Image 1 (tube, helix red, strand yellow):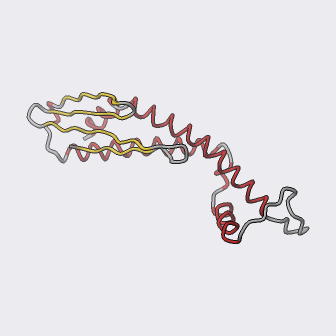
Image 2 (cartoon, helix red, strand yellow):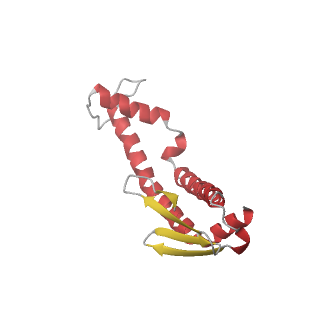
Image 3 (tube, one colour):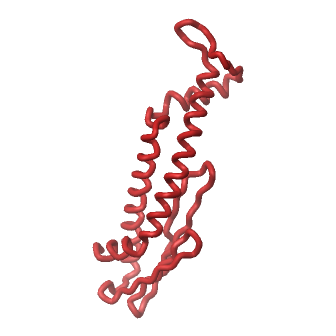
Length: 160
């Protein structure tokens, strides 16, 4: 299985690069949204020690206030610092490594002869399509990538 994992990693370097770049773009934008949301929460609160309101005080209903309060107090501090981007990139690399191992296990379960295995990878837009064959059996593995302005980039491998 180690040789299969190594082969898959070699064949999918472009996927890894694109995925980490997209994650970094998303994380930078998300960091700004996190900071803006934190600042909005501060505008909803009054200073506890002096009972003064923030200069730009915003009056909201209790449900919205509690939702923002929960967001602010339950998120770790790195959600509001540049460390957030680095952690998201690290998580993306870990996801890539884990998905390659899972893909190798699923391919191995198909019963391909790994000594005769040939791999051919192609790009279809941002997705990758990999065909593995041993001369007798053929397995097609392809990705489905989802992302959006707010949705974190993620992908899955499907096997046929």
